Image (cartoon, rainbow, N blue to C red; front, top):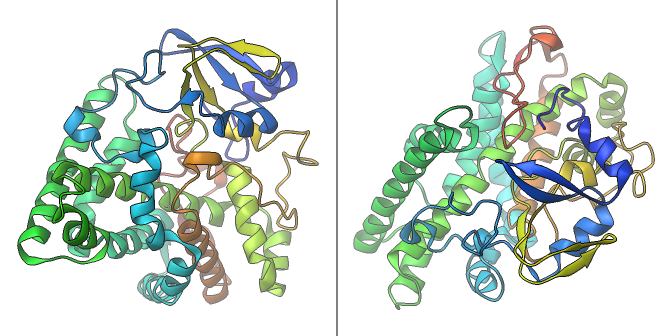
Length: 389
């Protein structure tokens, strides 16, 4: 069910949501459940009877996971308590306090990128702003040399944007390349010491035998991919959305205190990840939303549908920076709620606010109907956003 409009989830979601909180659909030729409403989505995402482990029989992505070595340490695909053990190792780097320390550096990077853009009469905000901001910050946090950013960006983009015939092979090849690169980075940190999360895990967990080399690589791979593509997509999409709602952009300019709420509304409104992080399988029979999901049956939460649930949001299809919601599912919910949510919020708030403050005359360089949106991709966004001032 691809999107067809930059401001709406797939139109089928409304029909499914109206019919009930759960529905049966087809995914890769097999029947699966989907959850369309927010209350049932929250219930599922906190229920330990639903597994996210792709090796669990019946999981919707069974067969698409990498080898055991490649999956090591990637705790997004693990259930409690194993998931929590890995997650606790990196929580301090992404906590509210940890991200607060990073805010001056985020602002510095944003200013440098804007300085570079202002040397010309226009720019592509995907390649000149969204991608490099997300890349520089996750590189710093992980301890990845920033000079390698172009290489790992190409790899992560091939993983996230693979589509059509041969998509799985292309994504798998890029995944293997990136894991090989991160393995070399871990080896170098083991020999010479390193910075960031990788350096710390090597020194405090790998050296003591608490983590294996493959586990350190897997943790780094997960954080790199998850912390790069999503924010890189949301930044240009946020600019496009605010330019398309000039009266609300004017409110933000007049009252900068509205920016945190505007970021939450952008996250709810677009729900760029949608179903891709919400794959589960029931490990026993579970009653949910008036249906019985049998053990071994696959199920997805449709995050973009839950975030448009009329039972939760008044006029959910309208973009409103004054809505004041912080209870959306853009970062998930429960055990697997996004570890990097505070960093993403900071990057979006500082990036968007600074951009519009420093370039108040910014505008689209082409018509909105000419913009290339990632309608069929697992992560929604723009391939390019040409602007001028």
